Length: 301
Image 1 (cartoon, rainbow, N blue to C red):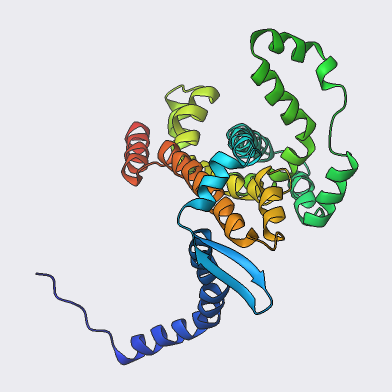
Image 2: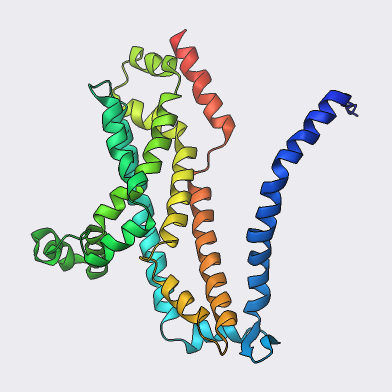
């Protein structure tokens, strides 16, 4: 059995100071995040009414969930549209961010300026600014359905054509969402050991082979973080078709909070499933990365 190392007095004091620094955040996290998160589970199984004495809750089992799936004609289509949007936008945003990161990582003049140029909209265009631009139609491309590309794709698959229309109509917003993933990808690419790339070049590997055999496998965890971040971000903006239904149900004084909580939890579970799929597809064990690095070092020797 391994012996448990006893901490010295100074180490215990340092650990105590660390928890004291974390204490304000922990209090805020459990008060304003964990408790409301758990309380929505309670509300989703209750009928919530506003009476003269205040809010009253009556247990109604899964009636709110039955309403969401069986009696409400808007929620299920909105949920399907949300899942379709996430499955379309999250990979496109991640791929575009990765391509831009590769280009911005090249040794070119004014490289820092170009990086700032791509990230500047993330800082300047806050949420309210984005809402104003989206409501005014300034972020959409008109006449997409008149293009030859759309007409060709429509002949093969109408749903795919409609998905492309949705993507191009919000393409400016797609570029806006690439800001943070670009920074993540640039940071990951710069941390790749140069000896691995040099060893591959010595072995006559092409740029395409280096990209697929070295760069992409190493930054797969960053791609996973980027996809999960994008899924969460897309769900918090007005393009999410489920959000208006949740907000509308909240202000319904008869039973709104219970129904809104059920809507929110169904949407949350759907988003968690998508994040789980992204984690399963893009997660890479650390041992695989180490094996690739050792193999590259052996080739160099």
